[in-house]
Image 1: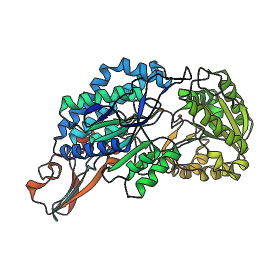
Image 2 (image 1 turned 45 degrees about the vertical axis):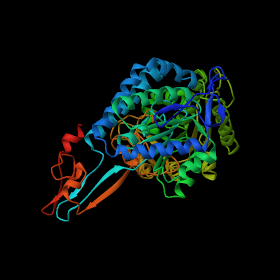
Image 3 (image 1 turned 90 degrees about the vertical axis):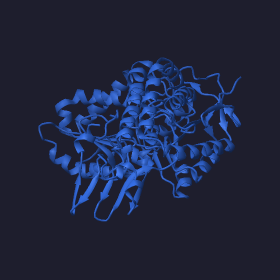
Length: 530
């Protein structure tokens, strides 16, 4: 059986592999008959050398060239969309329609085009020009970036097509993409189009490179290598923290998306007002994509009483009646089963589901668990175990005060949501709970479920640890997401002709300037609409 090639320094070449692996067809619960290489350290060396060379060239390229590459790449993805979506569907069990072809793929190309616009306008650079001291600063490309893609978004978060990739490239950095082992074929197709777009637009040969899998020790060695400037990672907490330890040991920025249970607080007045609507929204949000979203609502906080009891009964009925979806992999099925058992052993009561199987291929029954507030507060760390999939835990509290204590016991999350009555009856309770919830989540929602992350400049897809490794950055939302892969550069008394164009006095960019002791920012409207 032929082993697929890796993309190094602009060329597809035979891998210096230490072994091979195969992706899985989750619906068939079987391996796909194609081999992919496990790269050796020598292959990492070659990729790092090529990326270093490419970065030196990228620093000399006009921004327009980078923008053209991103737009050309988006066009090429669209032209090959049917093949990409078919293979992604086979490797993930996601339906071609509407999930991939009408959802994730357009989002992917939209991100690339937004990144192109940001690269062209330089609106992410945040230039600051102090004319009185002749000191100027701006954000610039940081250097070669490694992107580790997740299992659950093969396109929009993919290592060679997703948000981290787009942000790193827009800043002017080369990317070494490490494919996720669950969809290597999809990543390969995207890499083919990325390489062709790079050639067509005149990008350096090592701008985009692809390896499929590394030994864990080599992954940590890559994170420590001085030729690599930064890392973007989306995946499991355990693997991410090992990479973080390696990067931290050499002071290297690493941006992680790790784990989130995304608490949803449902106040009593909202249940009285729109009970059926909330049950339906919760069911749809929890089971969408078989629950395999990083923003899946894995924890629901209700106040004890007849409405809460009825809500749990209705939710379990909906879960039982809904089809059981296919999970991404056998390891995903086992991981979900283990997490549910951990929650049950910590005191959670099984209301429905909690058994393996029930769907096509790798699957696990739609699961609702519940626990009272006292028992949750007795063991909050374990009871925040992420059950990644079609499962949720309901916490019934004795009072508003206990609900506040539950919120205060939570780790950092990507999202937090509060449902409240529209007539104001829950406003006092909302005001009591929201300050603590606000500090524990990156994105706060009212009266809507958290699944779905809009690609907009105002988005924060981030949050306190362990949702991410740093609460000050977002993985979605351009231009903000670009700053993760940038370094702040200062220029003190530099002669005008030696300054980067965005720091020159005649620069039309959105710069902060101090003139006659007054700081102003020019062209805000122009750049906001760029």
